[in-house]
Image (cartoon, rainbow, N blue to C red):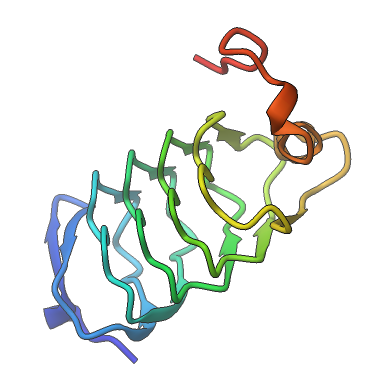
Length: 145
């Protein structure tokens, strides 16, 4: 379990994780996970996001190979490219909100068996449908920007 000393936070933006891994609980006052904040933290097994989280920036969890499942809270509205790149242990993404936009490359080089549980007819469910067959995508097929 993490504590507040495990994080560098500035004005609600988690800039860097400096903990030892394991089960990470991000403080409630964080609304954004900054670029590369957890990048390369292979020892992380799970992450609990705060309900007020809105954005997960580029490469935030890149290479966190021990991460197996995540739940995106209802208020998350954007997951940038490469946010979870190379999280090869990640097999489940649960999305609680209807309006989260997930960039095309957010889960690049994750498991081909990655499973998404998202509200029906939500932006995330459309992303999940496309993720299943990303080999057929062209760069212009899915661009939420």
